[in-house]
Image (tube, rainbow, N blue to C red; front, side, top):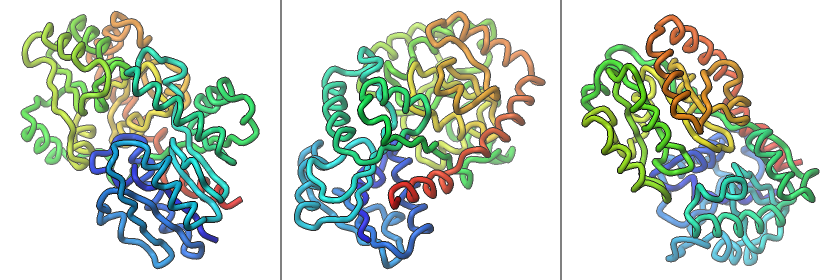
Length: 364
């Protein structure tokens, strides 16, 4: 059997959530199946780590000069010329594909919360997801919350959907030694204790309310560290809000190399995830697996991931967010409790489990 995999996201150099999902699944598939033939499609020069593969994995570079629509047009032509039996993609699928299509839907935030997206981004995602969901023979939702959203907007595909949870990289995200913590703090000129957010800096991640909450803290001895690249919408407002805070108390680090990303999480005192909407929330598991207490938005999908092992706040209330942060700063005993609970909770999720369930669904 020939299985086609869209790997342009896995092959991107600066990865965030959906790109790491694609990368980890491809790496796990190499371990799980050395019988079927896999055609791996990508557009840019191939990451050497992805290139290392068993003999049943064939990599095909399909050049495309435009910034978008590679999947819809260039990959469509390839699959028309060289058909496959089954095809797996994340978020977007080709306009033409002769084989059975399995699609992963990460979230439908652009339907539920359109004001949090740039208008052009919103239009592109709506059109692309409409095509993909209608075209797919099987649909993977990364959470029950995402499944409910798919059914709400596309009730006709209800019977096609299976929930398969994301994982996290348990090999790399783990509690850090004191030596590692000291090294990463020294590299970025950070104190012993700091609050951390990692992710894109944009409206839908609710960074504005996080900064407003920080201004309301009684205890500002711990700086707020923001690590991640600017998003597509709302970054100028975020910069304006940062400028209202005492200099040096909100620290921007930009996009981090993966090794630093892992070490910074493990060295933080509290990890904060204030997003108004998520399809899953991988950074929560990465922080828990690193032995860091988590504070996050009280939204259904983060409850689904973290259960009772994180501290929650109303994402629309900077005042409540500030109270929760102040309370956790003031209580070392509570922080230790949530560190231990988070380490246990994270073990419920893994990329190998995610990949095994995904491959089984593709092959059914």
